[in-house]
Length: 63
Image 1 (cartoon, rainbow, N blue to C red):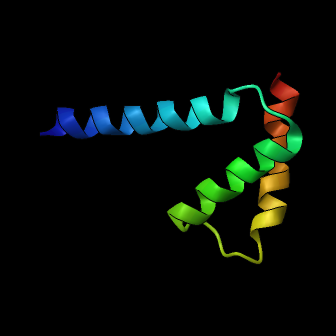
Image 2: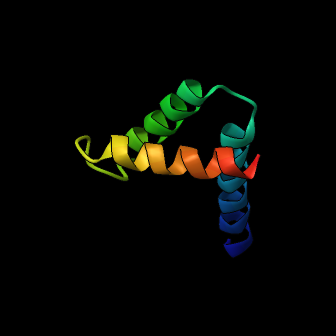
């Protein structure tokens, strides 16, 4: 059973990396990040724009 959960975690990480690393414009990338964070309930709606900007800047710097 532990192997199955490890597989699911790996699949989720891979999907997130693919979504973030697929070539996209800045606004498209920010919109994608915002949707992912809202769906997961990771951060409150009023703080999300600041976090999205920070993540997008980090991803764009890596390219």
